[in-house]
Length: 83
Length: 83
Length: 153
Length: 153
Image 1: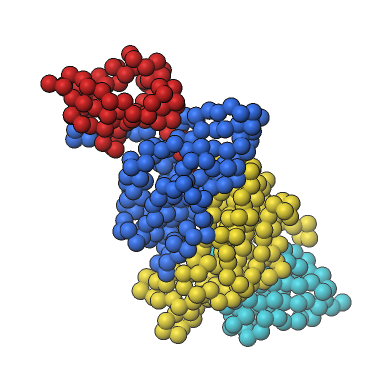
Image 2 (image 1 turned 90 degrees about the vertical axis):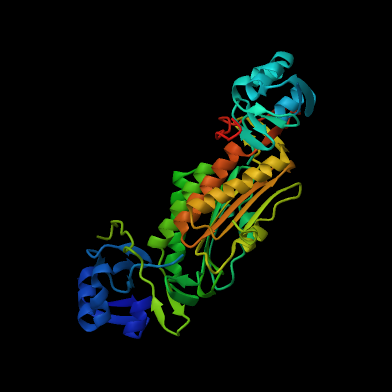
């Protein structure tokens, strides 16, 4: 079965990828780490930041071991710089 | 020779002594400590606070060893509580 | 924290520090600590003309609520303010206001410092420097946000 | 500190925190820390209706200037505010405002904390609690002010 994921990009990733939102269909089950590997292979910017990207699933931080579910919203969070 | 000193009282000392300013004529030379001893003997409130009173001479903190000069303004500073 | 005791917001408008202080005033407080981050013109030799803030709004809002709750668990917080401006913030203007009211001052300082440090590490907001020479640069934080284990693992 | 960079005052009027923040704003600052002391209603079981402040004004003013100068020697202070209200200060109103603007936030917090702690130890100001039952009590600080050696010794 397939799982559809909404991937959100911000800041330098949004700028370098050229999109703020990607919709992906991947074979289930898929972990957060597998999703990052998939994106890193397709987008050099994601690859460049791979080590410092953290995931948020449905607006909460989650480890790369998280198992994603159809319809999840996954944000790629590079080190934040608010304040 | 005599030396005239203006002594200023605040807060609890002003309240308990009943005056905010005392004018004293004492035999020179007189140190800050000697002035405090003199006042402690006359005013029980000064005696009660003797150990925690600090002196300011002409608007600056000074140790009890300070030698007072005719016309000096000497403030008796109990532990402060601003803020 | 109860709603009436906290004011947490992301906004595109200028921040009003006087209004934040007024919100923090309460008969229960003896000390109110405020931190305001402002756009600094110079970083070493480089001149900034403005900052631009990007944000993952719904999540940032939740993280700010969570941090305010954590502060209230750790310190006797009577009122808390956590505001972040987004979009363009010109030089000398405020991008963030953190305010805490507690009975005694040491707690106000500690909780306020905790909140700004945690906000700068955890809340999904990013700034871009726009320099006087026309170049721009996204600023990357010193360390990635901390990720807690979740029950989805 | 130069006059234009510091605002130091004793006043019988209410304090305006928004105006203090406006004074602290400068393109050179990235962080502004403010501390505001307010009259707290309850101390243990005892209800306060107002505080009354006594002060040795000319000396207090000098000590505040000296402390602001010491902060500027120890931290990269771009602007500093040190205000104390005297006379009656009702519950929830501000008696003291300390504000510091520095390039980075850690210095602003440290200098602000230093200034309020030093003010509460050194500046000749005293508060009297006026309780709901009509009693009054002069508050005594935890420790006497520190006395430096002078050349008059």
